Length: 312
Image (tube, rainbow, N blue to C red; front, side, top):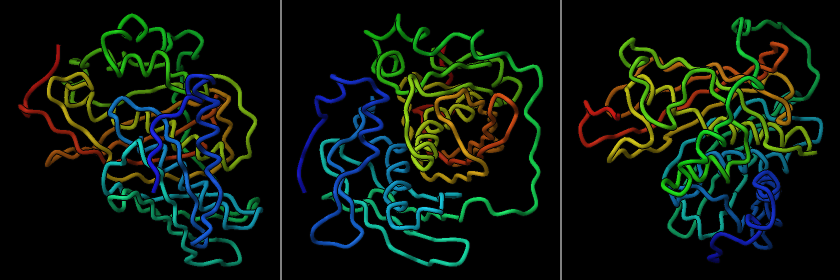
């Protein structure tokens, strides 16, 4: 397995263009059927392979083995170990079943040190009819154009913090919080009221012309930018809490309607519980016209030196 490191393409293209390239994956392996090699990873301040990237790439890898009339409708993944951003990723796709309506695939992602993710994703024939309903989008949500982008908020701190630099310069998404962001510190008010609820508008930072399966994969990556925030918000923490360590443990996602990553999407988020150093974040995703397109849940490990610590 080769060692690649971060390539120069990220410095010669926009973050969105680089993301699109990373999601194309490499050529199939010459030695193993349904194995795809990716030699390039997105930058992330932790120095590890970004979990949202591996989930998104797993969706793309699995999609290469199913019929063109089937799109992903769900994925359930477990993060087993941190990935080395300097190494290739191998995506082994196992066919579990091809039925008349659904196709199921298992994707095992490995590096030289062993497995880093295992996921099962299911695809459905497009256009099938059946029962249909959804929760309504909250009313009176501010338009995204009236809110300040995380890029602007984080720019003054970019030379002091790797995370600030990432969100100011290197994230492929435009993120705009309806609630006060916790990127700059803890939300004590939410913690005092035992509420991690928040709403966030997001879209691609630019325009991309890609198939629907890539839009859905990009949504999987996009949501990972904020899925941990409700847990941190309710706990009175932030990513800048001294000594904090965190990692995604598992991720589940369901798509119900087509997604356009170029348009604004509203994340309505909550966290029902946390214990034993683990917290559960959930989200519903709406288009601007109120269509509920997807839902997701993620459990994360969050540890601080003092369990009662909060940040100023």
